[in-house]
Structure formats: C-alpha cells, structure tokens
Image 1 (cartoon, rainbow, N blue to C red):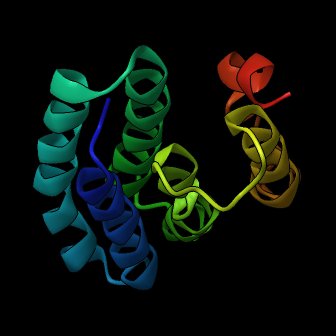
Image 2 (cartoon, rainbow, N blue to C red):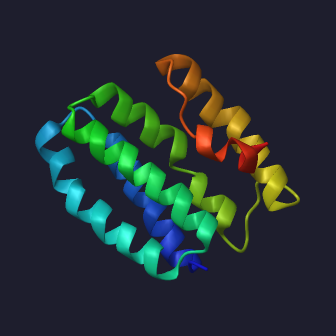
Image 3 (cartoon, helix red, strand yellow):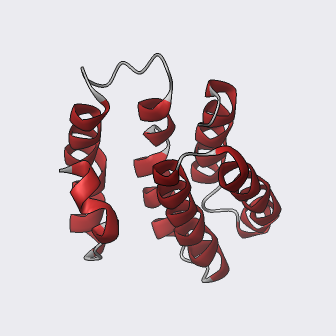
Length: 128
C-alpha cells in the first residue's frame, strides 16, 4: 500500500501538470517525473493503485507527447484529487467504494462527456 506522502506527491504532480498544460516545454519535463512516480506505484502500490495510477500516467504521458494541451489540462484536473481516496484519512465518503462512486460522478463522467472518450472504462466496475 502506498504511504500517504507518496499519494500526496502524486496529487501534487497532477496539479503541476494541470497548471502547466499550456506550456509545452515545461510539460515535456514532467515525463521523467511521471516515470519516477510510476516506479514508486509499481513497487509499493496495491494492485488497484498500480492499475489506476499507471492508467493515469499513461494517459497524461501520451497526451503530452501528442501535444493535446486541453486534454492534458482536463485529465490532470479530473484526477488531481484521486490520490485522496487512497489516503488513510480520506474524507470523500464513508467507505472507499462510496468515495470512488462520488469521484466518478464529479470528475470522471464530466471528463468523458467533454472529450467523448471512454476514460477509465476498464475500471468502471471499481467506481460503480
């Protein structure tokens, strides 16, 4: 299981990516940081954390490489609080399951609607 400080670092990374979404040169510099966080998640995360955060890193990395600044911003904006659900002091819901359901409704569904893509389809069972 990832420690809260690592989860918070992932959230901070998503916030930084969101804030620099329109600055291509800065965005590219985050690719190495994404890989560092991916290694931490793979080494210490639960199976669910590994799957979900790896998915997020893959989407962000490919969107940065594809110079899709609007998608980078919107995706990072949607997932920047995702780490909180996995923190030990989560305030999202009474249970992790209810937290994920709330998160889907507030962040993932609007992202899917705006971009017409099926983000998190492989994880829908987790969020519902």
